[in-house]
Structures are given as C-alpha cells and as structure tokens.
Length: 278
Ligand code: AMP
Ligand code: MG
Image (cartoon, rainbow, N blue to C red; front, side, top):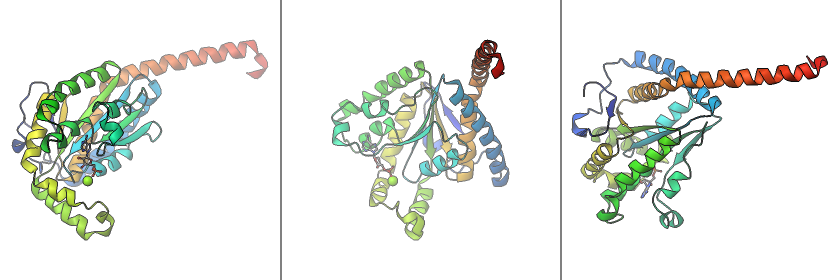
C-alpha cells in the first residue's frame, strides 16, 4: 500500500503497525486545508444532489480509539453537509432493552432512509471491538458477528445505501498527548474519563480487534485514515467521501432532470387549463 488514505478491500490483510498514523501524504498544512475546503464544496454539492434525487441513503461510519478524533471529524464534516437530511448517531454502552435484542437491532433502526445522511459516531463494529477486547460476550458469539455484519451491510447496500467506513488511526503517543490535554483545558475537561486511561492499557488487544474487523468486514471497503494530524485527517476523509459519491453524480442529475421535466409539463398543463394564471 503506497499512499494514504488506505483503502482496505475484501481479502486484504491488515497490519496497522505498517500504516503510519503521522502520515500526511506529503501535504503541507496550508495547502491541505485549502484543498480540503475545495473538496468540501464539492461534497456539499454532491450531498445536495443525493438529497434531492431521493434514491440513495448515505451512511458514514466513524470508528477509532478514544481521542482518535471522531467528534472533531463530525464537526468538520458538518461544515460541508446539508443540515437538512443529515443526522448524527452516537452509539453508547447498550441499554438493557437494546441488550435484550440481537446486536444489530439498535443499529438497523437508525440507518439512513433514501435522501438521508447519517454519521455513525461508533457503530455496530463496537460489537466486535470493545466486546471482543473485554469478553463482554463469549468468543463463540462475537466471532460469528463478522459474517453477520457482512450480511447486514450487503442488505443495506442492496437497499440503496451508500456506505463509507472510516477508521481513524492514531498513535499511542498522540493519544497520550490528547488525553493530557483534556486535563489541562477547561473546554476539553468534560470529555475526561478514567475509562479512556484504562482502555489505553488494552492498546494491543484493540489493535488486533481492529485488524480483524478491517480484514473480515471489507466487502464494503474500509478506509484507514492517518489521524495524528487533524488537518490531514480532514482532507483525507473529505477526499474519500467525494470519491465515493462522484460516480453517482450523473445518475442523480439525470433523475433530477426528469423530475424537473415532469414538473414543468404539469405546470404547463395547469396553465393551459387556466390561461389567466399564466
Ligand atoms: P463515547 O464515545 O466516549 O461517548 O463512549 C461511548 C462508550 O460506549 C465507549 O466506551 C464504547 O466502547 C461504548 N460502547 C459503544 N457501543 C458498545 C457496545 N455495543 N458494547 C459495549 N460498549 C459499547
Ligand atoms: Mg470517550
């Protein structure tokens, strides 16, 4: 794999140690920010078309360790997304009611309908990440989930959902810095959690769990985003999203053209019947 962001396709092996979280694809910060803004405008256009055409839902899955930048990514993306039709969906520790159903029950219910965009802040992948690392269910249960996830994503794709999956890849050193920052800055302290320091002790187990999820569930490709540099992360995600959506542009334009023609035809019929309204 040459250059980031790294696309993981079906059947590929993944060794996260070989993907550098500090990578910036050779960009300088200022140029990267300018390019991200440019692509952001294209993203805005594409999402507008997706919304108006009404044929596809867009599901953006964000995964990453604590402090990897999921919240920051969402803040950035929202600057370039149509608030109308976009929803943020966080996944927390499941409630007793959620636990009394299959693990995809709470997920399926909040997937995007046609026209909609939903950003998953964490996702069904927690059920093979935190759950696997801490044995929240026996191995015999979680190990069957990879295939269930593939089936689930296949169902969504066949039902006109465009899925974009991102793993925000940060280094252990960067995580430490970000956790310490949270202690020092009042505006960040609300995010402080002993849990994050505790989870850090399971760094290697998470690495293994991430690698397994990336390898076994890449029928819908994953995108590993080097995330130590936030400005590069923003560029890489925006660029990847635009590349995923671009191939649909023509079809959406065609659909909108037809809808427009139909509306014009109806309007001219209406005027023909009541000429004084013209
Ligand atoms: P945060 O993203 O900081 O709001 O934290 C949400 C917490 O919920 C994280 O510690 C996740 O690991 C946890 N979580 C999310 N989904 C699940 C799940 N399916 N099972 C167990 N814990 C989960
Ligand atoms: Mg947290």
